[in-house]
Amino acid sequence: MPHDTTLDHLRAHHGDFELFRDLMVKSSDGRFGPVFWGVFDQYVRPRLGERASVVDVGCGPGGLFAPLRARVPHGDVVGLEIQPAMLNTAHARAAELGGVRVVAADVSAPLPLSDGAHDAAVVSMVLHEMPYPLALLRELHRVIRPGGALLVFDWVRQPLASYAAGAELTPDLIQHFREHCLYAPGDLAFLAESCGFEVLEVIGRRGGNHAMLALART
Image (cartoon, rainbow, N blue to C red; front, side, top):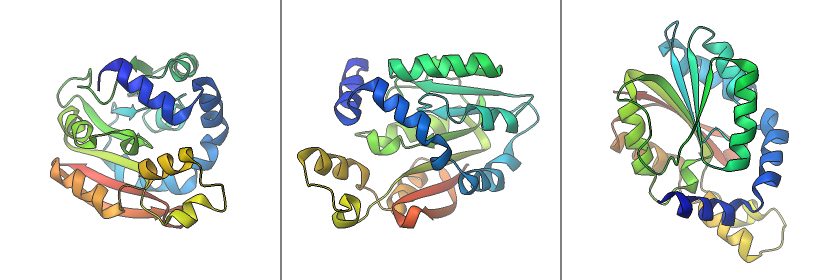
């Protein structure tokens, strides 16, 4: 999507960017706890060299920067983000940590990264936002070196009753349901395989409402 179209889409989905940024900061520890990092350490970390480069796609306010940096202390972390409020916070976190570079980039467009220049990427809560996620997956296959890794974490299909959890069925809730619950875990695996990734494992999270996919770049 064109840059302005992407921002319009995200604004309609998230509302006020600064309020959403604050929510992301507050919820980071709950979303990226021991299970998330256990999967990362099992499937991604063994594929990282001493000076590995890891891309955080749709990095938001930079909640993954510190733990990623700890796992590649002699490498680098590259965060890609488009929302202005997220970028401001991400740049501040990157400056505090060192070894982290933040790039303003629309991840629905070609990524401003070189072919095979990165050892791994993390894509958390991004694919469900994209009208055509294959474009991003193909770009990630391009920028991750052969033998590298991709870790996907996202919403997956669930019944509307469990998604609503007793909340009022407003137009906004129904629209979010359409976006969050479009793909089953197997659908995400199929998309990844279609772009040249090998599926190492699919892990259900949070009662099956989310999934993690550990993928290898073939």
